[in-house]
Length: 98
Image 1 (cartoon, rainbow, N blue to C red):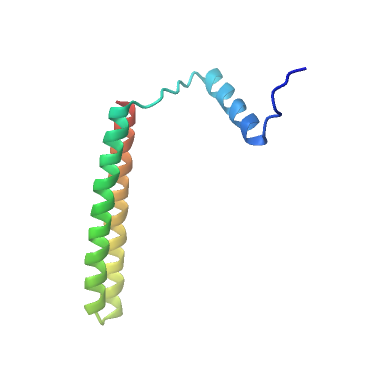
Image 2: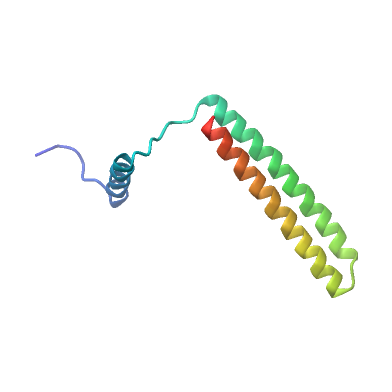
């Protein structure tokens, strides 16, 4: 019998997932320091952009009285936020792949 401590459900699940990935031929490579730096820069840039459009949106929405115009601005803001989030995620994925 082994002296190792019993494994948690999380550890057992992670082992199963690793085995499943190995069987499927999926290879996991740790990311390099350069990739980490690039990902951090991407996240910082897009965090600033998202904060910028949030501030602009809030300043615009306060001055609009018409509910239809407010709804249109809100929809435009959501569309811009989704676009930036998508761009960020795509760039991060490309940085991870190297």
